[in-house]
Structures are given as structure tokens and as C-alpha cells.
Image (cartoon, rainbow, N blue to C red; front, side, top):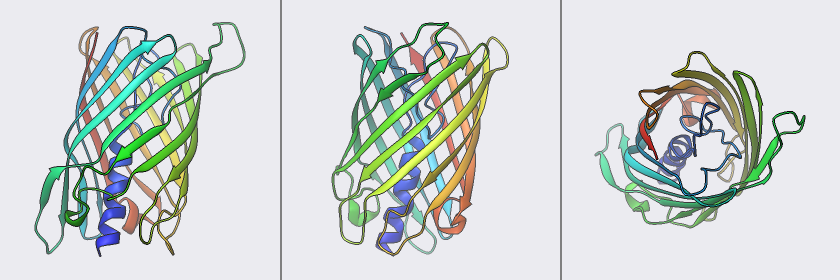
Length: 255
């Protein structure tokens, strides 16, 4: 049961720990799939968010979290997520506490012009530090590393991006695994962008099964600097153990 709770919590953290948004072609949160576009030099993105996943007999995720992204250099973004995690197993006591802190650096190494046919391309390595209490279902208990590559192309009001990478996932009963996702998004009005994504993940536990899912969501711009991010979805494969329902909700400030 402990391994199963950790697996469920990790899926929720992955769903909630998406990355950055920039300009009209917004990408990253509120979706699982990320993009290669970093925050502009000297600019900040700050999110207050909540995210969670419900599976058979358990709900878990980030009760409240903070994500900060900073444009530290041209084409380079530094990233941190500090979550207050929760785990609510059926028939057990609800656990709330500090989750695993995430650190990362996004670097875009291909930046096409507006008339170029090829996409933006970047890497975004992430490290999850075992700051959460694994015995309470609030952390993995081990340092985990994600090594992805992301691509993005804009077509007027439409944006499409995706890619994937490899998770280094140590620990008893665990195994390394692959994640891939792709998203299509449209700027519906000046203030509202809507999108949908599909994603797939290989088994992260010994003897486990692959999982897949989808999310639909969007971004609403209250002002130039304040934005509402939202999404919801569920699994398409191994649904009962991976994702019967998931959500992401955030308020973002950009400056």
C-alpha cells in the first residue's frame, strides 16, 4: 500500500508541476506537457497553485504550492517549486506536509524567426529533492531527475508543443521510466486561450503498467500581469490506479 500511495502522489505532483507561460503563446501550466520557451531575461513568473489526482481509494497532490521562474540569462530560465503536499487514503488519516521541492533550468538552444519553418527546441532538466516525508505518503524518499527535450511551433492564433524525456526514479520497487506528451492550443479571444493535451508514461514501479491520459484547460488574462490557469482531465490507460480525475488551478503574476 505504501508503494501504491507513493505512485499516486507522484502522478499528482507531475500533473501539478508544469512549467512556464509567456506572452500570447502561453505554454506549460496548467498542462503536464511543457514547452521550450523560457521566461524573458530579467523577468519573473510567480504562481500560487493547487493540483491533485484521485484514484481508486486515494486522493493526493499539492494542497497549496508556489512556483517561481526567472529569466536569468538569454534563453535560460531558472525554476523552483515548493509544495505543501497532501495524501488522503480511503479508510486512513489525511496527511498534509511539505512535499518534494523541485529545481530546474530551462535552456532554449534553437530559436527560429517568425518566417522559419522549424520549431523552437529546448531542454528542461529537473531535480526533485526528497524533502517530503515518504512514510506519510508526502514524498518519494529519493532524489529523482527528469531529462526532457521540448519543441514548440506557433501558427497565428494556434500553438502546438510537446516532447518528453526520461525519469531517473530510484528506490525500492521503483524503476526508471519515460514520459511523452503533446498539446494543441488556440488563443480564442484576446484574454482567453484554450488547449488540450495527450500524454503517456511507461511503468514507474516494478511490475507496474503504463499509463496515459488527457487534460483540457486554459489561461485567462485578468490584466497584463495577472492570469488564471486551470485544467482538468483523467487517465485513458490503467485509469483506476493512475488517474480517475485530476485538476490544476493557479493564479500567476508576471513581471
